[in-house]
Length: 282
Length: 336
Image (cartoon, rainbow over all chains, first blue to last red; front, side):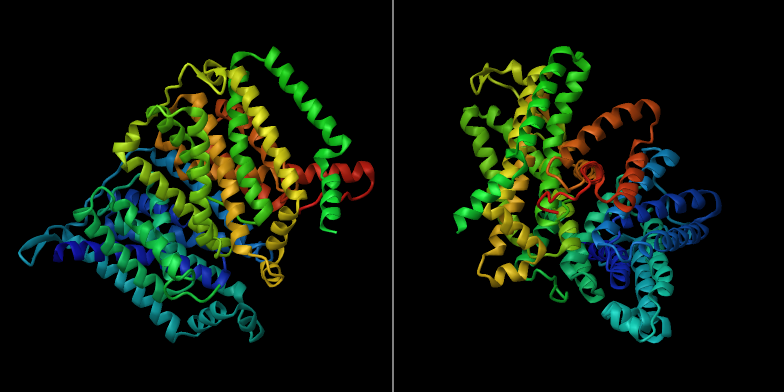
């Protein structure tokens, strides 16, 4: 029981980190990045390649560094240039980026499955309520909490965080008050991409690496952000935690339909609250 | 008054103009000539391309009529295909069963449309992606009904709709059948757009609130447009199942939805036929490129980015620009 709940917490916190990358970008740019799942996958593969040669921590740093660069480039080349166009144009372009990145991953790493061991320090198990639980999974929760906490502190207490919140609230009014969206763009999109990349390598020892991992996690993070309400961190947190638990308990108690449960939850929420749990009325 | 505008709009509909009839005649001649002279491989490719262009037509119809971009149309396509397989497996007479499948797809997506129709552009796109994935997972997991990843064989009876069922599984037979159905659907969409309901749908696309204030039930109209688009995709799925004789969950994967979307965008939505042209170009481009390079996926991504950014009208935009240049004036083509 407790083990199930903990597994749900692990998966939920991964989903939250991914969804918060989407939320962050959506707030500033009012677009959804369909390549977010591909960023996650790219982070996992790059982190894997560095980690098997140089160790796990360099792997995380490499994944973060490459993804920051990719995110900054995405903002400068795509989001900024297309800011005046219909948001759907940008969405379609990010879908194109997704296809290119999938091809890239298939070309460089092939289509096989990869598995990576957690670093020695974090391998092994602890006894929780009389049952063994891998330490590494607790580390995933800890790392996610650290990233989420860092982001919240940045958004609440720094000048640039204030600007980002203002621009998310109302891009036009914020711009009139002198907030420069185009300066914040690379920062925010780079950070969102880095979150996806770090989530990818951090999740790698927990889930395995294959070219379809990006699409799977993209769909789940979409479910999280739509259920939570597009653009809402709080909503994303609540729905990620609920989905994590549904996943963990579903696999044990309703194995046949476990994979369908998140979508049923999504349908239910949308019928009752089309704008999502904490979303503003669209 | 209303009747007058209706008659007027029917006359305006390009399909009923002499030029429309000429285009139709030329296309018929092309189909006949291709069937008579094309090699078996070309015809097989043409049959597949025509079936898939019906799928692209459905995605384009939704984009054109409602300005909604679907990333999940593989779902109704797959449901049409699986529905057909199940009809034959359970020995239901196809002449009834296939209609039932299409009615079921319409009803299901009408209900879904009532829910997702409340969402704006981006959220709608995200949801259709998730929805598509839902049906993909459902078909993969419900092994008792769909045989899961193994797929299902579609075993046709001796004759179907009064034709020997071999006709449906030979390239030339299926090419003609699919081309006729495609032409009928394109004509129906033209007529729909010229009709009162069609104009109302365009009105909802442009300003839903205003149409709502005029006293129309926009929610139901939106859901009906969504369901119609899904049903067209379902028709494509039915034809696919009949022709291939085999269905597996892969046809419901998100990448297929994405491909259909790319075909529709490549063709553009300035004319109804755009997605069809896009699908044909897509198909033969893929055939040609897969000989040259393995990086089909990346090429696809680059094409998508280039067309959406630099060439938003797609092929229909090009056609329109050429026509304007030739005739020296902008012709009002209705719709966008």
